[in-house]
Length: 132
Image 1: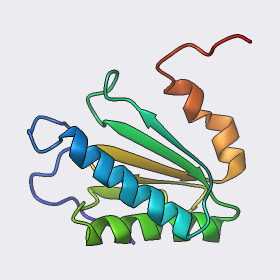
Image 2 (image 1 turned 90 degrees about the horizontal axis):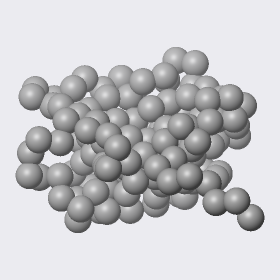
Image 3 (image 1 turned 60 degrees about the vertical axis):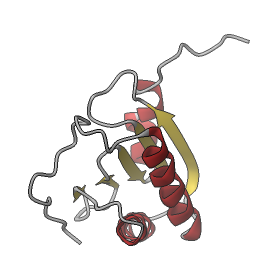
Image 4 (image 1 turned 135 degrees about the vertical axis):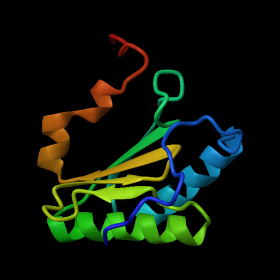
């Protein structure tokens, strides 16, 4: 599934349509789509304070390339049904890491090895990790 961007589609949140309510609604759709296809280790990160590209990032793991592709396909399909048109989907050919760009929410579906190697959770962490 290769999605072409809609005319005028942009990741930048210059329009007033990107309200906190929209972001939360989109996150709920993404969460349910990932859970429906049994994603593992779903993490949601609020990046609105540090990024002008997205308000939130969702990271999830799949157990195989086929599972990763199924997860990404389900996210894109359920988002579309809910009125959140995907701007683009990248990485489907290798399916080790597929990115689904929903505008104000970006979803990363990865194999555990790719997830560990790229460590997006640490990269996008906005607060220092507390020391126990």
